[in-house]
Image 1 (tube, one colour):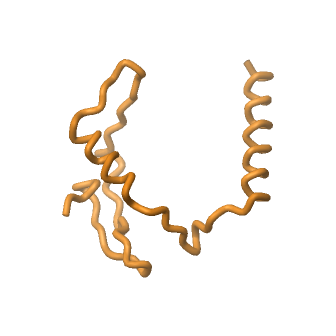
Image 2 (tube, rainbow, N blue to C red):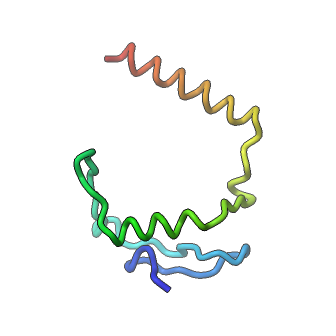
Length: 88
C-alpha cells in the first residue's frame, strides 16, 4: 500500500479507513504553487483516477450537509466575496 505522506504515521480508524494519526514536522512541509500552465505527472494523474473509484464516506465529525446547511455555506461565500470586492 502506498502512503500519501511518507513522513506521517497512519492507522485504521473506527470506520475501517486509513487515517493519519501523527502529523510530521511542519518545518519539513513543502508548499507547491500550481499554475494553469503546469502539467500533472503521470503518477499524479494515476492517483486522481484511482481516487475517482473511492466512494464518499461521511463520518460523525464530517456528516453529509443538509440542503439548509448547503444554502448557508453559499450565502456565507457570497457575503465573503462581496466583502473582498469592497476591500479592493
